[in-house]
Image 1 (cartoon, rainbow, N blue to C red):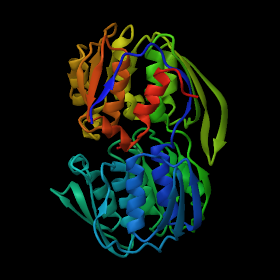
Image 2 (image 1 turned 135 degrees about the vertical axis):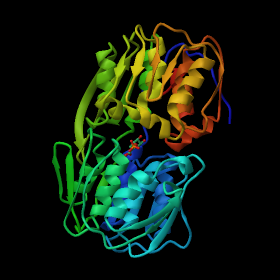
Image 3 (image 1 turned 90 degrees about the vertical axis):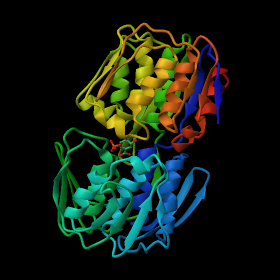
Image 4 (image 1 turned 45 degrees about the vertical axis):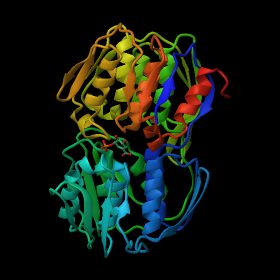
Length: 430
Ligand code: S3P
């Protein structure tokens, strides 16, 4: 589907976002192996989280969904049953990697497959720790999906993560639920800690000492009443659009502000963004609040080291902001971007260049000089949701109408995105 985006005069209004994708996956998976019925409100509307629900249903979990409310009838730690056919993770790395941790502890074999994009993404990062816990996993060329997971009685491990990845950390912690004793993960830098928070909420014993996170195996997980905070990574596109388009002002209500994700707000504020957080509260251990943002001229900045991991999903839209900033944006230590839904260094650079923006590409990053103007162009999502949305934001500031091919990719995390953007650009959303 091609979507046309006209330059925006300004964006105004307030909005609430669908539930956080990362948190929704974790709540659904833990609810499935907990005892009792978990009710999850504001569950992510994205296709990725629907893949997780579909996979859990195929493992014998009864799930009822009505709009954004999901009811999961937990089967207990040992209540899953073998799926009759391969599980379909679709485009979702989180579904495949995190669920693999649970599947590794089952007394049966499971095949889990993905779409073309996911089938090109590395899975050796989860295969290695899960095999050292006792599972056997076959993969294409030893590292690509589909995965065939032969579950086993797992033994606990102490695992030093070679890459900063919350998905891999979560995979090992979830597998640790099935091992007698304490399983620990040591991260190279801190990554999002939604699994740690959710595990505690469901009743598991989790310890965090610096970058070492451990979980005690064989807990009795209990059902919960939960409401997923609005997705900050979805909010990022609206924050960016507001900052970019003169005269804009937006209130984003009920958005997740977990410190391992909210580095985005600090990074923007440090560049001069007018941003205020109002009404901060805790919901099931997750900070939630309202964010008020106004158009601002940004200075630009550098993303490297631990900050790269903290902003990894936001780099496409931050690159767009970088081009319009005073000094531009430099991104380093971001080789992980090359193995996301697309090679995001390549797809960001390609779309920027189509808009007449100068960009330099490195193996693990990019540099976008500041003070540039966006030319109207024909853009492409390349099938990647965050690329579709990042360049819809760029298009708002272009000198004419832009077209985005493959705009339907936004539905992977945020099906409502284009309609909301249109409403806000017309100043009519409430
Ligand atoms: C996620 C972790 C990140 C992120 C992805 C969601 C998660 O991936 O890019 O969108 O929910 O744990 P990695 O673990 O591969 O860095």
